[in-house]
Length: 405
Image 1 (cartoon, rainbow, N blue to C red):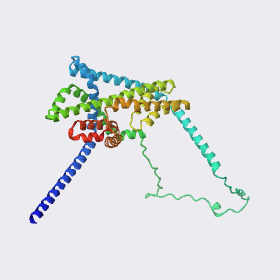
Image 2 (image 1 turned 180 degrees about the horizontal axis):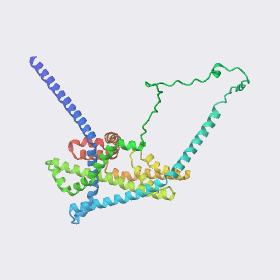
Image 3 (image 1 turned 30 degrees about the vertical axis):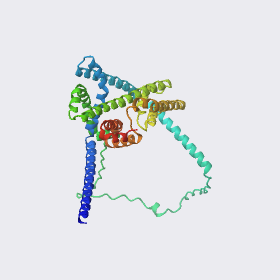
Image 4 (image 1 turned 90 degrees about the horizontal axis):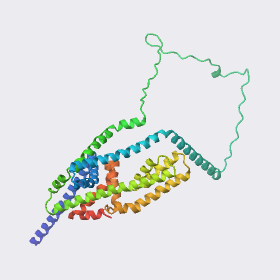
């Protein structure tokens, strides 16, 4: 009996230690996750800048590789590809600036057209409300209006308040016996508009954005020019099978990033070009700018359709177009959005980025909370990159299957 009791006590002690070790492991994991989230939040400017630079470098790497195969040194090839990309961005920005300049000149006319449209809508709504209330609410009986009081007769005795003479106020005297003169209150009026207040309140954020954006070209250049050295040095951290898994993970992340960003860019260019042509045919003001905005806004997850409709509808209303033009523009945006999301997106992007809708929604919520608008833009490529790593590491493959579709 003593030996049996000893064995039972030993088993209970082992199970108790096992539970303690499991709880300890869960606690460490929770603390590490909290610390990681805090680091991601407080260092978000650095992380966002680095991730954007990595994505741009992955997109430009195939073009640099083509020039390297032609026996052009990698630093020179990187410089040439970067210059071409910068020129493309410059001409696109110049075209958008010309459209915005013309839009600024026509703002007064657009404002009048929008004011007239809003007034007509308000009048129509008020007319409907009046008609409905007249039909549903019975007419109320109004009380008779009392006759006006007759004017007082001439020579009648006045009341005490009317007959009492006006008494001049007694001035307040100072120590020297002279009356004190009241000094008017002087109010300092700050001549700042709400836009100026908004800019002043966010000067620090704008400064951080400009500072970090200035690092992106340099990061992209060094990532591309030192690509072979960085790749070999990174793989030296691993040995044997781990090195093979790390190499496959890097290739998977690079392939996913190129497919996602380049695929979205190509689809956005296609939507913008078709929208531009359609809006120019129906004479919507500034079709290039409106088509560009509508085409790329259509790619925003979940809310792309309503966002893509706003620019052409507002432009048509501001230009004083008829209702048929607005309906045609709405139909064009609807057809293009459905075509892109159901035909183009699965073939170009979905074949490389396999994420289920629940994970996409949660990633948008999580990264949007941490990094605001930048988090919403980077949520899907970050999550897809994590899945690419999980798919190539044996111990993390169950997590990759959980993230997948």
